[in-house]
Image 1: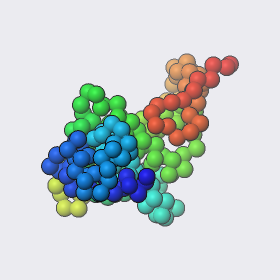
Image 2: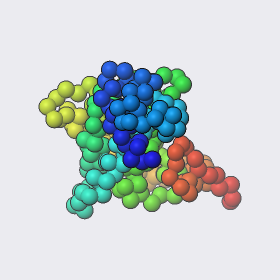
Image 3: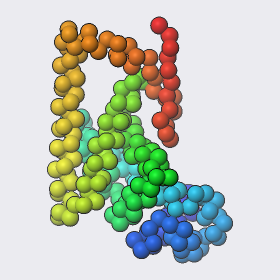
Image 4: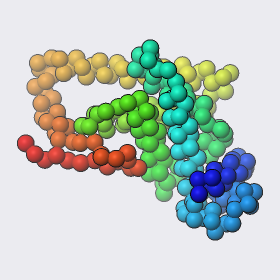
Length: 226
């Protein structure tokens, strides 16, 4: 099925710039790939939105493969994250397909799918970089990075600079913003008054556990013990 899915997606990319992620694109992709329409519908039960998500996840998989092949040993962690985001952008086969996907996921009935796609990219990056967190930081790391990735993607869609140079600079600025926030949090944690102020929230956060398996949505668990 994976080979058939890949063929359908490759065929779809020639139609998405004209018809978007739509029923028309699904039908055209099935025709061009020589796949019975019934089989195409079985692979993408919800049609266009499932095709768009498959395209997004293929980009995540390509980014992960490239990242694992990259020597990151001498990089600062913030530079590893920046490299991962750049590789994710570079893995995109069609800018127009992403633009059309953003339009699709902006529809109220598909906003949760769009949010999940952004979350999955963030999780893929953290996992590929070796994140071992098992507490609330599992969520905060991914939520923070998801916010950065979402803004980077929107910036890139409007970037017409040679070689996407403006986007690479934007990635660096956004990561620097996050690092400044982390320094403030560390300062609060190292201050007696700050520790006292955060004692309650920190206790609550200490009860939260990361999911046992890579998520498709936003699962987790609550440890109610003392």
